[in-house]
Image 1: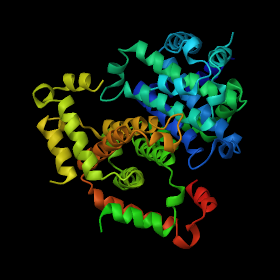
Image 2: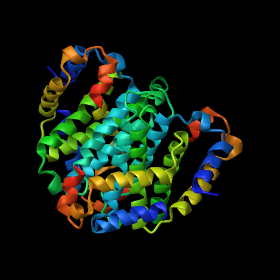
Image 3: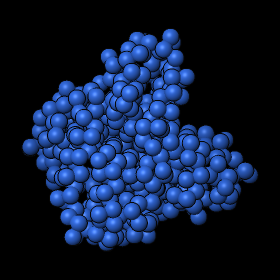
Image 4: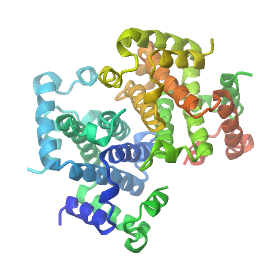
Length: 109
Length: 109
Length: 109
Length: 109
């Protein structure tokens, strides 16, 4: 069973699809991203890495809500990632962006 | 090629792994989640659905940064989703949470 | 005593200024904004209004961290608000933006 | 004129109060906090401080939306800050939390 199918099964066993409007799903992705980010508050990356179980849980929550929103909108996860990477490749051509932190920062703004 | 392999290839062709500390990746997931949420600002879900291309792009960005953080931390995407769904199943047993918006809200708090 | 002075006193009594780098303060504002937003998850505005104490607490946390960041950066709260409203007035001239939801949405994008 | 009065005047001259439901205001605070945080993405605090004008603008946006939400809910800004600091003082007694980063981190979790 794919991860998407598992996420859908979890939702449908509870009959929760009826509550899943897209606005609250997008809001939930943002809240889970904040819970993930909280693990880094007042810490360096090295300090935060000491809690892998919490990191796994919060990152999984971001992914689960992202999959739920994708399902609501009939998006294929692999397809939208592939398409976005193609767009990013045009914005960040290898020749211009390779190995350069300065360019990297400027290009991200 | 899996989506994870495509994301890694994109990063490595630009030699960007050196800049990818986990704190800024978690921060980036949060920023992309906000850009996704912005598509729903002052709108209903129905109104926001009218821009599927923008929704695809911003949701893909959330996923791409999530995959990058997972790669940094040596997490397997499917594994952490499966594990988290198992934990959620304990928190939200089907018998208690099925079809009930009231319970659903309370359980989410 | 002004609110800013009270916030500074709270921080300085605990000798916490040394930990208050601007990046983690900005990150903290974002986390507190998410905790505030969580009070609206799966809810209408009307439903969320039923918990005024929680709304007060979370909104206050957003403000407290915002004041702390302003203090770090030597910004005067009233001055930056006045300046930003002046910039916004140029972006949203009354003649064009008055009473129109359609324009309001478009202008916000 | 107080900052709150200026914010209200800006809103009322455009007749925007009718659009200001609390859920979208809370969502907007979160989005502005993300725009502020974006100024720190892939940067140290020192690097980010080099753009004071952008920091002023984004921090002001967080404050302006926070004031708008407070006005909707009939909250007095200074009052909710004072009340929250009193609650925080109980959670973080000076004797236990002074000067200690370790305690500070633990207490924040």
